[in-house]
Image (cartoon, rainbow, N blue to C red; front, side, top):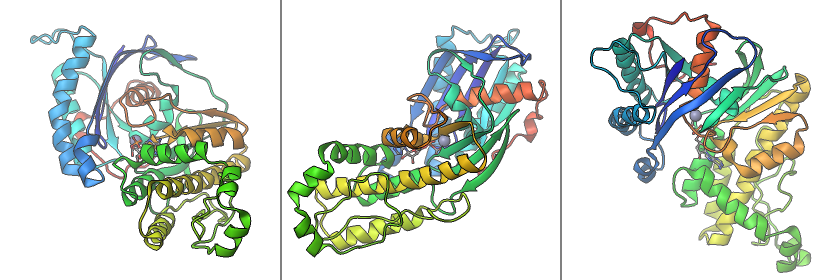
Length: 394
Ligand code: KG4
Ligand code: ZN
């Protein structure tokens, strides 16, 4: 069975063709082969706005979709015959939410046209389920959906979401905590903008932070700014609830660059990142002119604060629900330091997506679409009932 999958929820237009030999049987492992995979990123187009502009994203998706389809069909050497006697694929999967509605509609309208033309079943996919399943995917070659030990939890960290999801057997999900305001990726993007770094900000902040992390050890800092000198001139700008991760505190500027770790001690599993973002804003105002070194130190302290908060809450959830497998996915899961710290602090089986599948892609949509299809034993929604839902929940 060949599955064509389409992703247009944000600023990546992506189309893939996966093949599985399992057809409708769901016995044990499900294996896939990537026949073609293509992504067109709109990052450069949105960069001047410092974020994604929905109508512009929609326009670009509409422009990119037929081009990408042509490429993937060519790669797979599928010739779409005008008489339509042969269906080029057996199933189409398309992201139906959550995401930017105009952008989602571009993919859905395109998928509906193909499904009608090819008389092919169409499965709407929840983008966040796609992120969860992205940990099993590969960009090339073969892969299998591994058996995992339950209970499982997924920490989903992207540009639009930050949530802890209890993953139960048979693809059932329960959100047990989420951000009350900004998503982690959104905070990365906004703080990057404050520091004059380009969009998307996550990789930029991470690059800057890593530079200073590897260059500066606590010892080196102590030598540069002796403790006595530091002690007398230190003023705290904001309180640190429980500094742990990133013990290299950013000091030596006449005041502390410490940032808060939001909601660290609340009993629930919710997050909040807007206060942290505001704390960065005040810090920048207080400092005045930012040189490269201060920027890097703020980036490091901000990254430490986000990572520490994410790990703390995830650890609590792992303990409470006696979790055996942790899935960490979504764009922010590409962050190397986050991966390192999670592995260091949470001692259970952890699955991350491979490089290239942490950020938005259509491989994960193909996996989720096919698994939903077999879960529902081949029953699909009527094409006309498939619609974009910007705030679709798991
Ligand atoms: O999952 P994704 O591609 O799109 C959404 O579904 O939102 O996530 C994009 C987000 C952006 O906010 C981007 O800044 C962030 O993921 N991101 C990172 C890194 N790479 C991407 N954040 C931190 N560190 C990274 N290395
Ligand atoms: Zn995403």
